Length: 249
Length: 147
Image (cartoon, rainbow over all chains, first blue to last red):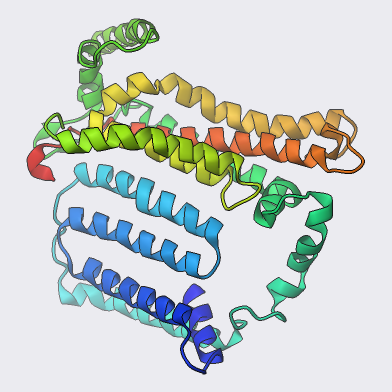
């Protein structure tokens, strides 16, 4: 969608290229380069890092489109946290991906070509970038822009829409995030040792009973220098848990 | 990671700044870009950076897993609780105007937005940390050769 938007906007301003347009083109070109680099690479570590670069470039591009709130989120989630989570996932598997034989790539290639063709087919239907007559700018969005200075009186209309006009939606999103966290905790547990699972990574058994966190609960008490008073409580909490685990085995 | 002196020193300087920036994004979200979701992710990124540099066990002492469990629930409860409060005060669900009455200024809206954004902050920050804890605790420690 964003690409289509861009294509139309560049077609609409056929005059001399503005500096913003050059920045947009540069960022898009870098995105394509990074995408091809990801495709060609076999080292998963490098691929994860390049995905972070990709997110950061997208964030820069969102800034140039004046979508600062989206850029913020993309930079923090895409470049920051998901990179770390992907790294964690990579450490549980191999460091390199196996090369895929050409005949196995034919099906996915067809799917990608079809999807791209469908997207390009849809491009002419997209409103031009900044078009005042587009559905977004003539419908309820314009109404929010006009009424929010009086109703809510916060300068950032995005916040007004998210938290007040669309408070129900944001509540739903918060609950979705909560459910996602709950699901992960139910499946893996906060210490990665919930449920019965076993796995070995490069010869090291990291199954439930040998989860690194389970082993690490004892040394924790000695390692960091005493800084806070809260620590003894945690020690007291952590120890019985470790004992219980020992009793399990 | 005990050998990475530069990383440890720089991150010691950076992490407080990251968390403060998160709070700025949270409380300045009415005036500039940002809000609860972005702030929560930034705060979580600070915690995760700490865990990456100093190890997951040290991080679990700084941000105990129990906070994570409580925080994610408290966030949702704060958000829905604001809605229930407006309900009890006689308006519709999440209609903040009744929270604080002022004929010239929508003070109730400001208070309501502050409360629900705080709820979003708690839930997002703690869920991100929870997911990280769940995955990172399964992962064997990185050896220096892996970098």
